[in-house]
Length: 214
Image (cartoon, rainbow, N blue to C red; front, side, top):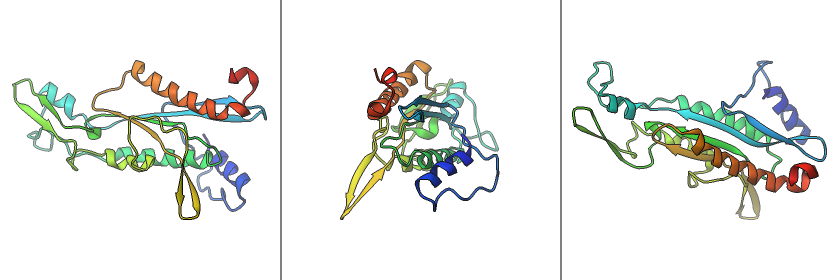
């Protein structure tokens, strides 16, 4: 998805938006791809954006008996910050879909940096290593829950949330975040993506061609 296209969309909604672009070929490319359908106005509408991020190999290393760190004397590595790059993609698709009543962005997280409960892993020599989900040096999932307003994870959040703040009504577009300590299997990811896509289709149903809304 070209940044130029996103800017063009923003500008059609409000002439104050969508002006700044420094790198002509700047683009956004979620690794899981994008699925679109054609509406009854011959416009393509996004019904699914998916992305999977892996950060933290501590469980694999422990199971293999591998020590880490500069001196190779640690069970765990301090978590990195690579996952924060996901926020760029999320923000750009929010810009693109700002006029929609849904946000079909699915983010699959996997690895020891995304624990939601404490786990105990046994090394080949029998020694047990505890991975605490509330250890700030290990866990990075709180940096991603900013993308769903800290609502529950492992939940379909495709339908926009409207909240009342005084006399104002504010629309929130939340990412559907799913997480596992170990690698996701395609058979696990597929039904979650399908549910989000079906939610988007249901919201769009009045605007879709008859052949696509059946």
